[in-house]
Image (tube, rainbow, N blue to C red):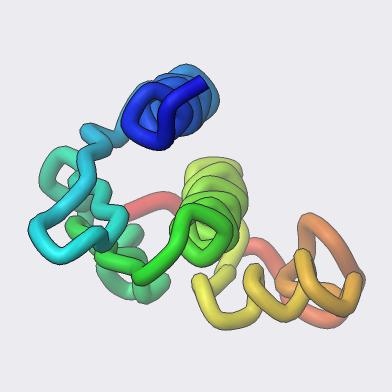
Amino acid sequence: MAYAEQEAVELAALQGRFPEWRLWRGQGGSWAATHEPLTARQSRAGMSRTLIENTRPELLAQLEAEALTDRHVAEGYLCTVEAARLHLRDRRPCCGATGPSVETVDAP
């Protein structure tokens, strides 16, 4: 399989895993993703509307952290993207959904 075809397959696989994001390859080879406008809770949790990473694995890691944060925020937990990254990497609790250290918060 040619390099461009492999990239297209990898991009399609990411798109299938994260359908709420619009994914593309940027000029210069970067990997990028854009999300619909964020809610106030998503913004407070440190979520980004646009992600740009140098490699596919870096973008995948960021998308996974954003998705975990989004799920926890939607469930009413006080979670941040940085905490979710640490949870995914080191299995540290990132919020009340993954550990007992943080209480749930009321919906906006």
